[in-house]
Length: 244
Image (cartoon, rainbow, N blue to C red; front, side, top):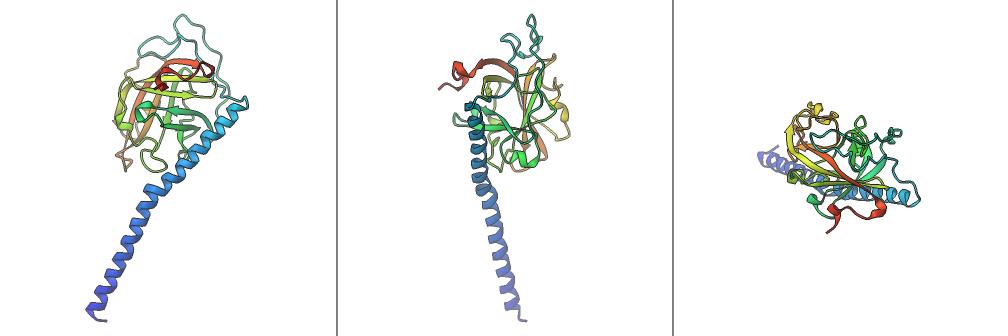
């Protein structure tokens, strides 16, 4: 076999391999995002259909003065709300999250648990953390890239930003107090009921958001912590944070 034939064969193999790599990157960047957007929209549609039939989420709404203000006693002077109902159903949506800082059209479904298949459909609630609006730490994870890039702009979050959720019966407005904070995947204390590095010192009603870092890697995690600032019934209209 001549050198020319060998060189030509290797060149063709390199071109073919390059084409395959380009197609794979296009699939990861574009097609998984398109599919994920459709899936997330479908999850929200399912929730809205469920809520329209009179089956909103069963999260117990805390008293107005029992929100988790940082460093303040939780619900001082207020009666303790009833015990929370049973756990959310694994892999199923139960709420919708809105973060105006990420765009006024940004909204994502929140599903129960953080397994791979669940995070392909939206954001995932850490199953052993508090329920939405309840005392403790309601912790949520989401992809930074791929599968719709829900937390692509996570580094843009700032102190005071609103994170709004609804379970179909109540609006919950959390306010970010700290983040983005960078840590390692083994730092599971970030979703503790009172995260040690959050700045909170007492039990409250908190929210933790987590995603991967760097943007196309997973060697670290970015964290944002927030406290429950206010609640209002859905019938009262959108909360102020969502009004343009």
